[in-house]
Length: 76
View 1 (cartoon, helix red, strand yellow):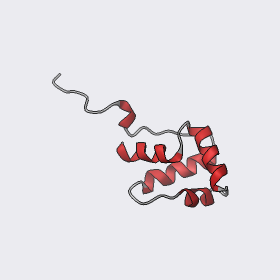
View 2: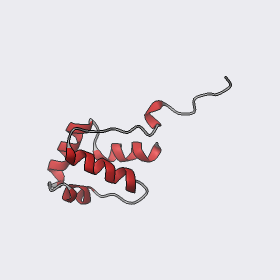
View 3: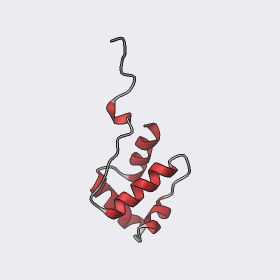
View 4: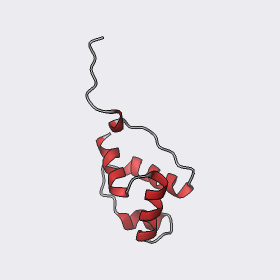
């Protein structure tokens, strides 16, 4: 009864699953390594794409660019 919300639901660690195996692989990696430095080229190589192609693909599938997605995970 005396509880109050300290942050919005966007900061809660909500599992976001994609129907794309590539995006799922990247999301799993980010969730496991969010405390470390994560580079775009590293993730693009992981799924066999160029950095530009991966950036567009990730934003299309998740609705967020990679840096915003990583920030949300870290804040959560």
